[in-house]
Length: 159
Image 1 (cartoon, rainbow, N blue to C red):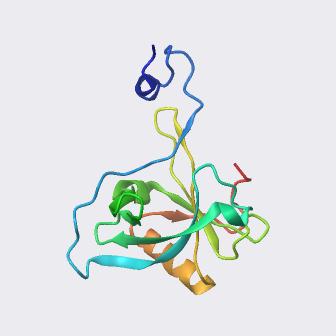
Image 2 (cartoon, one colour; image 1 turned 30 degrees about the vertical axis):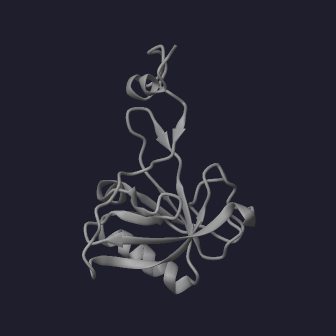
């Protein structure tokens, strides 16, 4: 029987063409942070795994923040602890797209895309802020940690 991690390590279980699977990231556990080290902290809308950003029930609220190191962190209610969604290196290499009302059912949505790595393409992270000002604040903080903003209207089609 094939180990699914063989596909991740080799790009394909039989070593042929690069693996076409798209991965969702789940970061490591995070040690408790001292008070006051969060760069940005606020509730954010998030599309659930394999959800449709045009479908309102596929969105949920999650407490997320960028910590002082540039990691995107969230509190997992299911696990009862803080987890890293994107590492600082991920944030540094990310591209940010503002999503229009035609591209998402929430008005202040945005998408973070990571570059492919060893032939593996990662599913984008799709988020929404409560206001335009809050979305711009998020984007400014991501840029502060190295992310690049793409031109409005340049967001990819629905995946």
